[in-house]
Amino acid sequence: YILSGEGAGDVFEIDEFSGEIRTLKKLDREEKAFYVLQAQAINRRTNEPEEPQSEFIIKVQDINDNAPLFLNEPYLSSIPEMSPVGMFSLKC
Image 1 (tube, rainbow, N blue to C red):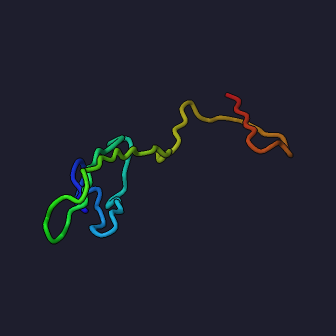
Image 2: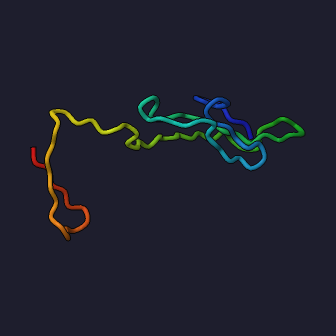
Image 3: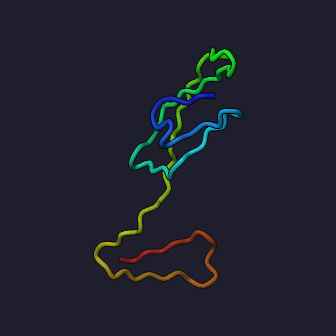
């Protein structure tokens, strides 16, 4: 298998025997939301394609990797004892 397209070789690599695509570094959706890659199976003896090229769109999911930012501090809040999970209360 060979891999080409955005990030091939520096962000993504392909296992030449199994075709498994892996990342080579941490991805950040704020930097780039998706990548378009092409992969193709090549016969090692003839160097000819075994099948048509396949296109993959890698969509980077976002996680909250930024520390919370509170303006107009301080905030005072209380949650009653024995409150159900997921309950929140904020008094400004």
